[in-house]
Image (cartoon, rainbow, N blue to C red; front, side, top):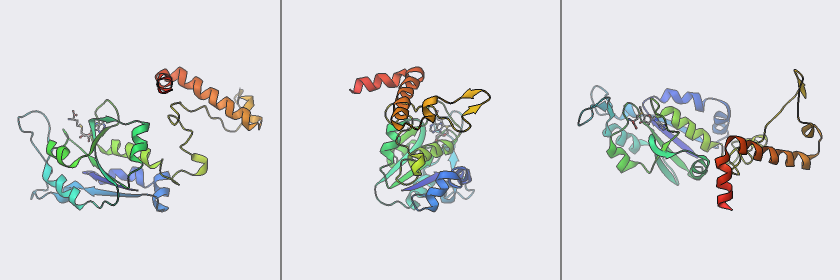
Length: 229
Ligand SMILES: C[S@@+](CC[C@H](N)C(=O)[O-])C[C@H]1O[C@@H](n2cnc3c(N)ncnc32)[C@H](O)[C@@H]1O
């Protein structure tokens, strides 16, 4: 997969691509991250990329010309989708993440200021994605959240011991609790069954715990399970 970020702040993406699982996946050739600086494509002699909103009002709007030209320069291959990170978009969830993991190229436009000129969205964008019902300063953090969540579902990105398959949301359940050594810490012990070596019992305990955790913290998810039966 290739993920292209179209942004005014490419250096922010070092936080994602230079570390941990994202870096390992890129080094292994499983994913390519590219940033495109929208400012490099402005034809304005002062390098401006934004302007005042028609009709008045607060803030500035990202102008269409640099974004259209930036999209033209982006390298895409295979099944491609253009996404704009926006609080007005479809709210990101597990199903949406899985659906996007099937693309070969995802081009992600990051807004700033009041957002982008509507003609960009109407002409170039296939889907607007929101990471939640609140407003952030820019689309860079949302783009990294989105890219990180999608990347985890690509084959080989997570090691065998980090499978995404039984994590929270995978079967409409939250995950069971985890424990590691020592078996006793400050008088607090680990559930006996986890030390038993009996894999069937451990499996059953984890299933029951996942159900209980979901019932306590997200009963709405269980309602969805029953609705789907
Ligand atoms: C200050 S926001 C613009 C908000 C816009 N004026 C509105 O009221 O809907 C600037 C940029 O941050 C990004 N952004 C802010 N909140 C977001 C969210 N919840 N999800 C995704 N992107 C968001 C978008 O790219 C947006 O263009």
